[in-house]
Image (tube, rainbow, N blue to C red; front, side):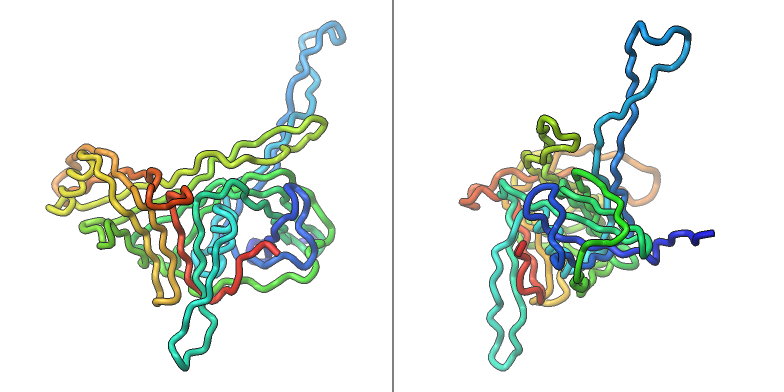
Length: 331
């Protein structure tokens, strides 16, 4: 009897595609760590209610429907692999090598990702289940990524939402020589700060955030799988929870006034190891003030980000990643 597959024995390799749905080339894959993934190719059966061919009270013969591919994935929130997912969500960044103090060894880089991309890269993900069984997911495009700022134990995680084209089962990976993972500088669960106009937002106990590309699939005649995905209007939204204090009341007043402010979410390990999301025109949605028993009271505010006129290229969200990785190019 063959042995059961265990999660601790799985591996995943991610590679950029040269064209949508075309498997990434050999030797272009990089190992990526993950906690869970729900990528799947679903293909429902449909009724074929043709008349005059089958008499009697019986089910209709079923026929294959069209495949639907994609799903969630949970990965470590670290300052190396993050660049791969930001690239998938926003496109290739502008990268510059940092100027090091005299006597310091060079090797630090700043990558700037902007939410303006009209063309987003597609990827192939290969999941090794056994030595002779590999799941190859092609045409993967990142519809969204989400996370949180909160005081939590363990390491921070990043949640991905993929849309894809197809899944193929292989007896050999076809990945060629796989590059090592970029997992370095992992972020602890308690790390992270939310800022309003460059200052820490007072009385906030937690925040969640979500960037979404609103990808829309398009069809191609004589092709069973989706022809590709067009980027829709992106959005950066989330929720802030604050204690009901004088500072919390100030957020309540800010939301009711509809006043825009500069929102920053920051995870920093050092001056040259950090991730910053910056939205130049964020606004809180008005919220009620429920009373939840005798204990300390809290309010939650939804936020959203509007177009930023100070960004001449149309980006409303800028992600700045500082790490040791020289390039996140597709080549």
